[in-house]
Length: 348
Image (cartoon, rainbow, N blue to C red; front, side, top):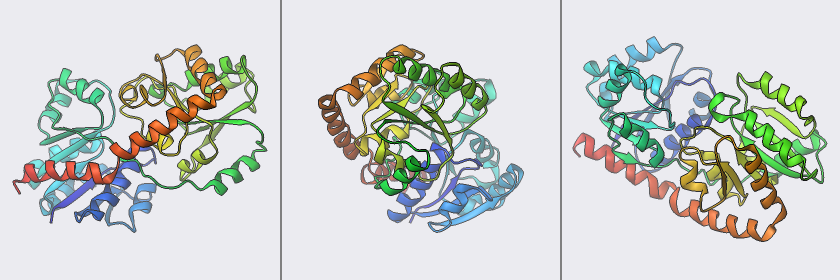
């Protein structure tokens, strides 16, 4: 039986942490013995507590020393973030175990030491061909392209409707976006796109789930375009995928995006998708939704208006997208790819 240590020390709950939880769950279901090393008092620690053995840490220094002392107990150290990859590589002379990194971002690598760290990684997994292309430019070989899991969890419609009632939202088309308020997600373009859409129609409200350092600027932009009451910043919500049950459209305005796992949720829940063509988004959305160029808020608005006005197109695209995600993003398809890589590395 493979023994895998999953490592993710992020304090927040974003796409990478949700994918870490799904990885733990699906690996355990496949008979892999999994332990999770993460920060204490975090959503990830709480949510995985009932799934596998969880080791928690207050500091990255503790993570480093723990890996030095205990890393050798595992066949594979499966790292989920760049920061913890550094710790796994630095402690490698002590644990001498294979380090596998799943990279979810398409940022270019900067600096000689960063490139060395990646080149010392035993197994490099990227979740999209776009990320693999970025790695290739930095002379880092990708061993496998294995996309993120889609959770295939049914949405809780009652919970979503309760939130709409709490905000007095009725008889409106719901546009959903799930993105941290950080530069590479480009939330300002999303606001401008909705301002352009408001010039074409007045029957929608935007629910933007996510938070971050750009919140003051986004709030200022919402006021600038008179979108108060129409563009709602919802902050962090648990099980945000429940809100696909009431959504008429899902949108992303990212400048950079490894894959966009929320797009997979939208496909599964039969919600039409409009995004930019950033990174891995093009790979999934080009045939299954509608794309606009990065930063092109007018085109994003136009694409949104097409879906909100054409139910036949919505039916065509969502049926196709649902089939696509079921066939390509299931645990049954993706876990064996990880197992094959792990067993190849440990020589089993």
